[in-house]
Length: 270
Image 1 (cartoon, one colour):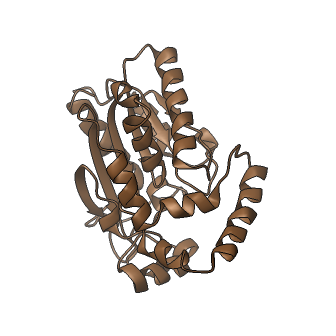
Image 2 (cartoon, rainbow, N blue to C red; image 1 turned 45 degrees about the horizontal axis):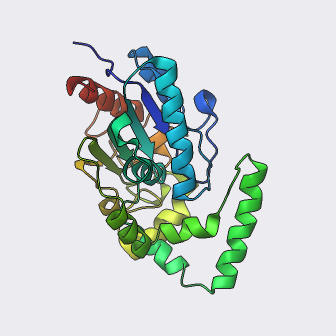
């Protein structure tokens, strides 16, 4: 059985971190996929751009990948807000005819009640924080950072409007994965946010609860063996390490999940 999908894989990153390709956002994942025979490319959209602006970049990248490979379509694997950027490209910008599948991991398809709470702070204060963030992300390479607008799009009301305006394309296969940390110390990088989101929304991956991550063919909530769990940034191998040295119930290495994804895409003829 062929382990590589028919179409190239386009990795679409999330917000707040620039994607530097092979040595950046995705850790060991690109190499693991290439070893399975996948043709891997990176979207490289702004880390803090609006959904429409980033979707335009993704569409351009899809066209570039198709021109380079001669393929008819791509398989998109998207993390966090990258899933929303990709859905907009498919539904509103007409990329559906060029996309076989969209796999999302840790994507806030239904928004975040925690962001709702943050947006209750005085608007001038939130906008000031957004402008400060924009300055930082512009220095890191973003062309059009727009943090305040991004915050608004991640509210539950923003997500409701987005879902209404961006219906799924019947010709695209949609699937999604969710992850959770088992306690705040599962990933010290997200300990504080995990604690806060737990107070507001219950179990989460350090940023989002699993119920907002479900879209299309939902593959369920994945966690690691033992007491660790899997965080929002574990989902893209930012720590570049396995979760457990001894076999157990759960995901021992996040690379396993990506191998599972591409194997299933290959089986589906994508």
